[in-house]
Amino acid sequence: MATEHQVEVLYFASLRDAAGCAQESVRTSAADVAALYLELQGRHGFRFGPERLRAAVNGAFVAWDAPLQADAEVAFLPPVSGG
Image (cartoon, rainbow, N blue to C red; front, side, top):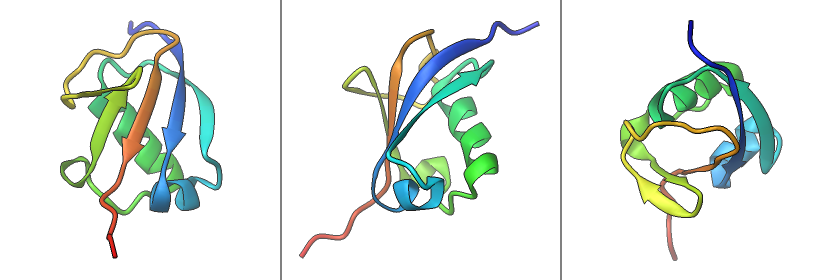
C-alpha cells in the first residue's frame, strides 16, 4: 500500500482560478509529481495536461517523474501569454 504524505501545492494563473485558491495542503499517496497533478486535475478540472505545464518542487524545476516527498512544496506553472 502506498504511503500517504502531506504536501503544500501552489497554483498560478489559470490553475489558481480553477482551484479557487493560490495554495492548499494536500494529503496524497501519489508517488511522483505527475501522479499528484493528475489527482488534482481530477479534483479541480484543470484544462491543461502535464505536457503543457512546468512543475517545481521546493523552488526548483523538476521532471514529471520526480518522486514526491512529505512536506514538499510543489508548484504547477501553466503557460502564460506575455504582452
